[in-house]
Length: 460
Image (tube, rainbow, N blue to C red; front, side):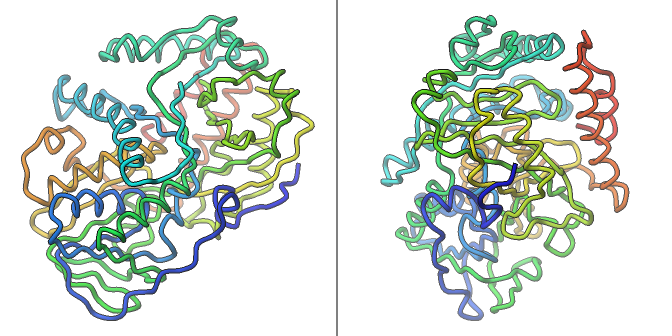
């Protein structure tokens, strides 16, 4: 099915209108902190730093406009979830510290909601549950395993519950649903509204955001751009999925593509067939998993990986995605919700998210160079970026806090392989995932071993 609009950043901007550009860097300047990237990570960092130390001279430089990247294109899941490997963090930390990080992630939902309310940011925030569904036996087995793992890692009993097929269907009438689990305490947001409101808040605090300013190099004490240089003792690299575009960082984080489609508004009669009265965030336990939400104005967004990676870590052009990806996402939508088969697709778009070699997020500050960073969220950036902002605040101000002692802080992993190895690895992984899902959908009674092979290829 063709989408009426493909690209033009995202549907979220079609909903509110594209912004006009702020002025670029006016030439050489000096600052106490220079933040590269005006997405959630950079803006939250500026917000918390300026709140803590109003006298700080902070400058934010951005190649496009604030919220151009993943912050304005994501699925709108303010989840506070922990989607990384606890065992990998455990190798360099303790169980208690990993639980503390998990608890800190949960707290990001309340923190973002409170900040939005305090600053008058209207981002269509609605507190909802996250519903993860299973539509065949292997998926149900994985759902049960994920539920048990969460409980084993001290997820509070009031935050999680396993649902029968009937209980799951009562929430959303998913085809062939076998069961699932819910995580409570999450929220749905309109991501472009959130990042636009956050940018405006940061400006009101006295932090300039210089747009249309391309960073050419980062080094100790200096950010070189096409509009001039910023000299600052502290530099924050807040570029997430675009990090590979900065010289010297080409293999640090892989820019993984994720795409979405959004339907035309759903009629009341069709909503009556689908259910979804709780506006839950919807995902599944397929290997090539999906993510969906019911929007403020009554549409359905469906997201997934599609064509997962462009050779040489290239990124998209203003969110335009491939027809193959649109077809795959539409197929997922009507597989889960065949009631939607007649709905038109109003918009399709894509973006990139940062993926470290071990698929686990990090934040830190190199005291020798003064260069700080946060990202590699692997798709959990709406909430993780808020924790990043508070953690980087404490690191930059030299505070020893509970946040700076979490196991993701100053954690470094090896780089991705050079091309063509990383292209072959990522595409092989997702091709194996698709085959594994197809076999399970066709009746395989256990998780396909192909998925385990896929994980071993890239360390997922």
